[in-house]
Image (cartoon, rainbow, N blue to C red; front, top):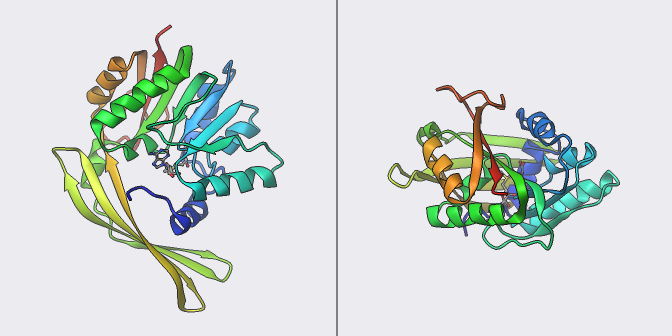
Length: 251
Ligand SMILES: C[S@@+](CC[C@H](N)C(=O)[O-])C[C@H]1O[C@@H](n2cnc3c(N)ncnc32)[C@H](O)[C@@H]1O
């Protein structure tokens, strides 16, 4: 199964991107959501890296994720902080809530985990239908240039006596489909002995700026603003590392 975020992947994510670790995104989302008059949904909220600081800022957050292991880390971190843990096990493709949201946010390029364009377009419609009239969708995307990135390095993290390693190898890339497929090899070592290993397939799709804008319009969004590197309203330049789309659902 692709994009699984199983036990070792979730552990590595939590070591590499703990609660509150920001790439400029947390301050940006906090600012964009300031004074938001209603509940906010973060699909694919993972370990709560973004969700928990937004909860702590007083925002009325909900989240879901497809990985039970990521959800467990998020819940544990909420409990440790004496916060409610408003996260449940759901998927982009099928999520549903009784309430509607003032905003839906998808930081960290998680939308790109939807690699079939038809499925991605259906999810945009699902986001639209989950929003209150004039509710906002805010989505981060990596630039198309990431299609040519060449991973291959080994990274490692120390957690007490445990050492976690991750090797990423590109196994396929399609310019026609705008996708990359990588093998993620996780290992857990202790005292020089291999305790566990896991292989995950990591599949991403990259979007052109105009292509994503058209997909948003098709899903019923308007007032579309594209920003580069978390400078709201500043068009991305050639070197932008992240694009953020903000759009409004039809009234
Ligand atoms: C890059 S992490 C992002 C976590 C968090 N939003 C953040 O900004 O740190 C991507 C998350 O997407 C989740 N995910 C993958 N496929 C999913 C799907 N189809 N539906 C919901 N979540 C999914 C993974 O379990 C993982 O927690």
